[in-house]
Length: 289
Image (cartoon, rainbow, N blue to C red; front, top):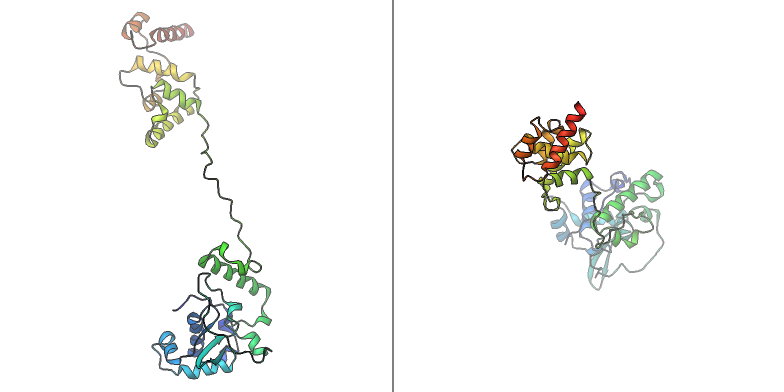
């Protein structure tokens, strides 16, 4: 089964890999995808060709031999089974944490001394002795992005020392009560004057009331002015008192209409506060006089 592997910019500029023909370079990268998490796969050229280069007329066995001569892979045999080991695969690749462990045996231990070619050429294909500081930082950033995309920050213990962890905000406790909005005295005064229970308002209705309160606030009103304007509105109009109607007629309801107090009292008997309406009317008359 093919797996997702990472490829770095050094793949395209490695002068040692340039000695391999183009199809051989594609084959080399394809081996990473079909190798297990230890970088091992069966040395079966016909099967490898069908999986990596199915549409090209080429000799995969010969190209594998070239990659082995250049120390990019090791071809070996254990108990009659021919195998391939990608050099330094585990050092430079980041398999998914859920990928199963390798069931293929490693190459027989022979000479463990690494030659310069073996040191530089691997699944990483970046000359390790010639990396600049900027290139090293870019490689670390790419590895971090790969880890976060594949397994997440918490599932990457192998890279704790090379890839900086992201500092995520601490989750809020589930039982934390929602923050209450500060009460708006003007909003409460409008609701009370219009006979509205603000706890029963829907979001749409609350938005309309807030829009009316905003208009009233722009007029420089205080909460104490709202019931006075509400009483005056009932003297001027016969339509129901709503926040939008009150806001739209705010300037007109600054004072009651001009009928005699007797007519005012007679017209609004039983409305609720006729005495206060008459008192407001008398106060306006005295103030104008």
